[in-house]
Image 1 (cartoon, one colour):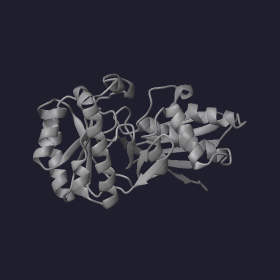
Image 2 (cartoon, rainbow, N blue to C red; image 1 turned 90 degrees about the vertical axis):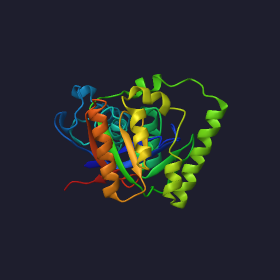
Image 3 (spheres, helix red, strand yellow; image 1 turned 45 degrees about the vertical axis):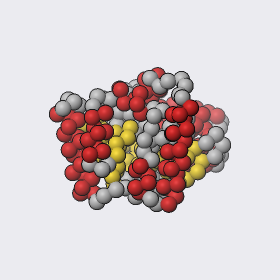
Image 4 (cartoon, rainbow, N blue to C red; image 1 turned 30 degrees about the vertical axis):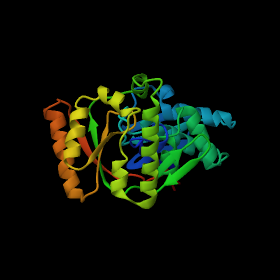
Length: 293
C-alpha cells in the first residue's frame, strides 16, 4: 500500500494559522506487514533512528490503538525538504495515518483522520490541505475548500532551516486592534478573490502584519527581496514559518520565471544565501492511496 501526500504552504499572507494550500511536491510512503520492522528512506531523510522516525512512530501508535502489533516494512521517498516551511511534518503525519488506516481496514473516516492529524500536529493549516487537497480555510469546527488561485507560483528554497518552534517564538503574544482589523479585512478579500477567480485581487490581499514582519527578521534579505518583487509587479510571501519564500505573479510563466531567477540571484549574491528555485502549483494535489498489486 502506497500513499502520495502533497507538500503544503500555510498562511498565504493574512491567513495566519487559518489558510493553507497543497503543492505539487509530494512525499511517497509505502508500507506492508512483514516479519520484522524495517525502514528504507530516499530523497530528503530524517536524522533519526527508525523508532524515532515520525512516520514510523505515528503508524505504530495508530496500529496499537486499533489492536494491531504486527511488524511492517516502511519505505519513504520524500521530495519535501525538512524545516523549510513546506509542511514536511504534516505530510509525514498524514501519510502515516492514511496508510495505517488502510492496514487496519479503514476504521476511521477522512474527517476522523483529519482530527487525529490535527491532534498530533497541533494546528490544522498544513494537515488539512495535505489530506483534503486544495486551498483550505480551517476554523475551530469546519474546513472550507476554496478555489485555487490562477497565478504563476515559484518557491525560493534556501539551504538553511527554521523550526516551527523558533518561528513561533518570535511572534508577539498580542497585536493591536488596528493590526487585527487590517488582517481580518485582507483575509476576507483573499477569500472573496479566490471565490471570484480574481487574480489581481488575490495578489493584492497577500499582505500581513501578524507574523511576516517578525518571521522576516529570521530570513536574511527578506525585506530587500520583497521590495524587488514589488518592482516586478509580483508578490513575495513567507511559506508557513519559513524560510522558504513564495513568489506569485499574474503573468505568463516565462515572465514570472525570469523574475524569480533574478530574485534568486540577488538572494545568493547580495545576501549570500544559496537557494533553489522550484516551480509550484497551488491547490491541485491531495493525498492519494495506491494499492500495490
